[in-house]
Image 1: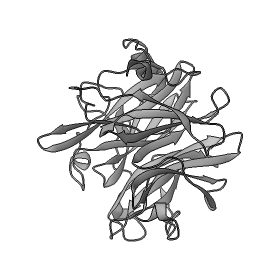
Image 2: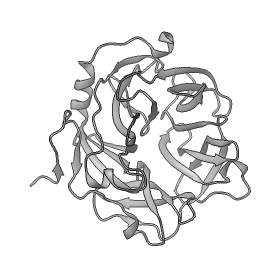
Image 3: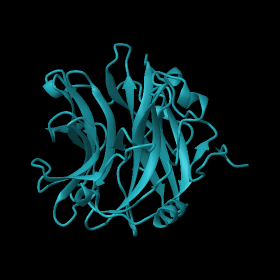
Length: 324
């Protein structure tokens, strides 16, 4: 019997795990209002989620959850794993939405996250080897900026960062480059919003980029404002491996949208917010971990080859940076 379920939808690439939601405030070992938007990585032969936890004051921190199969029997840390540093101005109002990549050349896990300063949200970076001790590097770029991840390796000698600044009120996905993880430049729009489409008002990176032979797989969220509020859906794009500011192709349809009760009912209804991904190369399985209604964590599973094949048939596009 399959442990996945699939409702009739326009797109059938992702199938929800039957045990959704996999993490909820009710199972948390200490009081929490919401548990959502987790980063995901493999650590010591297990799936590790670094979950955003909102406390009863409305501030967020990160707590670790581990599972041998990435689906069941989650072991949640009894206390917060990473809390805001009270002496750091950029973390004044909490930590949100982490993404994790393994940087081979540093032999460390790099965690990008949103830190909330008086001036607004900005992208910060911390490093760890063991998820016990964390060394903060500090803010990478000024506010207002969110939805960021490093690429897992240098590209043409430089580190690359995907992020979502707000420029002139516009919310597009950008890419930037750095020689040292400290000084950033060569900023370009890579995935813009599309007027009139389902992702017309805001777009932002979901989980960390996934390297495939055909290009960097980008899973992102797109927002459309409706009479009932914002609707967060999930889309796909493929970036060139050597020149990731170039979009090889971008899907026209969303691939996951809020349908289930736990995605429709919560602190922010109508939200599926992808934040972490694990690829099982042996099974060719991509596991997508997402926040649902800004309240709980859901899991959806897809075949990686099917995702790439669907994208390869989409219309080829020029670099979005060159189009603007």
